[in-house]
Image (cartoon, rainbow, N blue to C red; front, side, top):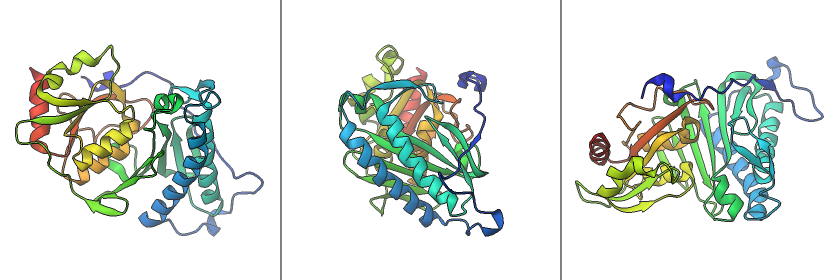
Length: 304
């Protein structure tokens, strides 16, 4: 697919400044030292606790599923999306009020200037909104720390299973972690076999992945890209495929986790995802596996 075809044509969002309610922004000279990776992880974990607190009571409820309009990413925003984002931005506004400088790109609110273009925090407060609206207990929170605009410049990825509380994170050059314990991908399927395939697609587009489906023993469609990708990183899912264009933004944390265990993340034609912008406008197909030989097997199947 040509690079230009990966873009949706939606207008860019003008950054807007966010200030903590009831307080002025400290002068730059008073800014605290930049957070360390561990410091950012603590912030992400605090955000996760806040999001769980407001989202869990709304899962599957009429109030939680009440539609409010469309977010910056173009998807329909419902009340539980809004409540989750409020909690995320409250925590990040407090951090900015203590002198930290960064920006935020959220699937709902768009780009928010909190003192500097980078580092940039990517936020998908409710990954798996359809699951959440229907009370299906598979919903994630995705956060990523970016030092530049492309996936290659993601430095920290964080995913929380909002329902169970299980969390994963990855550090560029430092590995992937499940509940703070570093993990490597477990091999469950023999060479030449895809035991479990994960798809992110609509029913109208599922036939685009037919060669992979026929090659696989079992099919999973989790409804949360972030959670599907972390289970691909652990090896629970052999191959994850998005056979039709999907927003790159949603994949950011999971792509880093897979790469940190030695896996491969490309589009359906084998081009690396790392060069793509992590924004709300860029769309791509995806083919990911923690096991390079299974990625190669899947790529060959799609090329037939």
